[in-house]
Length: 257
View: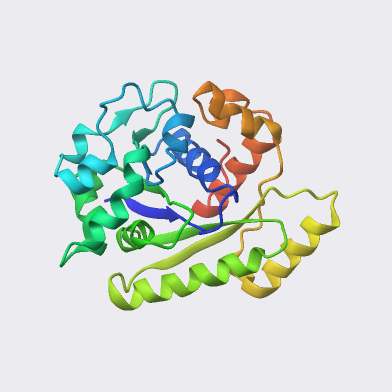
């Protein structure tokens, strides 16, 4: 049965999608079966892996709100080893529709993923930059939450708000939800700001923060334009090495990818 990890932070631009794509790819290169769920109406993960092929293509919206079997919407990666459950702009109105439901509105994603959970080792959910019903659905479906934190001022503010949401979900719909870890992103050891923010986050959250950080790396920004993860684009760059190291740390293994 797959372990489900939600990658979440209500702040935008912190590296959620980059982490979702490259963590999923790194896991697949370790021989694990991975499904990446794009749960953001911007559809950046879907676009970054070239998973959207035509206008009427089934997406997570059709699965959640129209009863489409999840297997009918999953796209098998052409250039990567991962499967993708894509999203597009239609997901933007899902919060309003879900809010009208009388019961089970927080468990729609959890129920939708159940039929394929045994087919994967990991299911990674790329969450939207918000704290609405979509995020609540992702946290209800997940076993754990991975929190990317950008090395910038106000970083702790975003994490604090997310932790309040996690506690709410634990009380209401997913008591077993835990924090997988916190990963510092866009880290630049040459700047005092990155060093200071990283130290502050580590002092506040201690062992929850991964030792491996993700550096600023232009190759990480370029890879989605080719429809691939960093591991297909340039395995020798700092970004690829950082995500490989983060994945090994998360799994507590020493082997290289």
